[in-house]
Length: 73
Image (cartoon, rainbow, N blue to C red):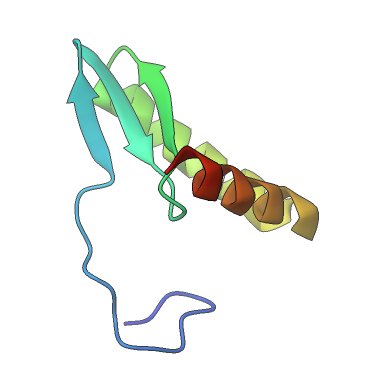
């Protein structure tokens, strides 16, 4: 099933969460790593909060995040 805004074939989906140096992080759709979190559960809560924030934010917030992701890559 395509996500909102996806018009093409489904991209490969991999785990959004990863661990580095005993801390947990999650990746946004734009490829930005967010963290650190002490536990996977905290990272899962963090991604839920992030998605809620983005869904209710001004369009410029997601545009800024996408620009940041391009510069970080």
